[in-house]
Image (tube, rainbow, N blue to C red; front, side, top):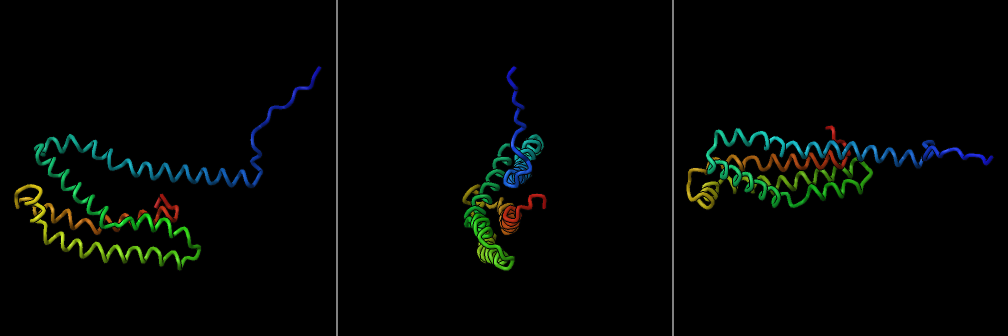
Length: 171
């Protein structure tokens, strides 16, 4: 009778190259899951808050809130100058802790130099935004609050990019 061959058990897990690939895949999977869940928090929260908004806000107020949030998002995108993406790129080019700290520091300082004066100008012109978008001065204060949050949002974006660059999603 012919000999039957033993079924192959799969790749040899003792192979260092194979273990390294598995380690990278495992790390990538964990980070993707954590960042994916983090990205989903905002839309899920909005989904559950929508009935509350609908109950307490008139449709026109809900539209105004959406317009305020959209205005803030556009300003953050423009003021951020995609430097958080550059932070991710250049952080990985350096091995030395000092050089990496310089990349992070330069990014944070430059964004502060841009965001703080921009916020001051936006706060001073909150009434103009209110009149321009809502044809009324009544929403100058909500615009003021929206603009005050901009430097903090930019700072959070820098911190999140730093966590991504360090591959520390749980922080």
